[in-house]
Image (tube, rainbow, N blue to C red; front, side):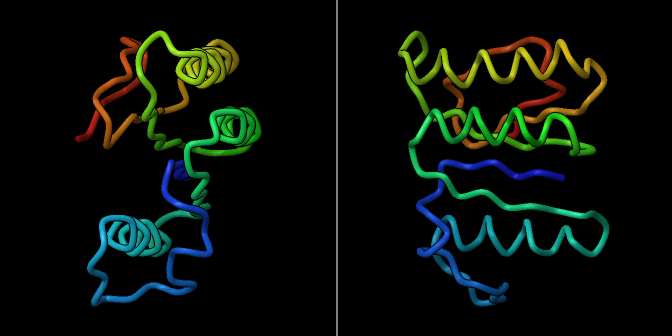
Length: 117
């Protein structure tokens, strides 16, 4: 499982799960860490760097069993297109790989398995 987010860089997230997490991204991080009970999970906190988000999407497409990704960019913006192209390339390469978009409802792709928001 790859969790690719626009959370602030990992330096701003606790290095280990805290059950008393109180900020938005801490709660996300703790929930992702909890998934390690059932999955091999990698957490990515990449800020709003579309190129990094797209790059990790491409890398994880080759190895992940599922991908959760946030797409915080305005539809039609160059950042949106960059991440959209990476997601679509992954879908073309591995059409049965579960990809879930989450947190932001600005991304629209009928081929993703679900949107959770």
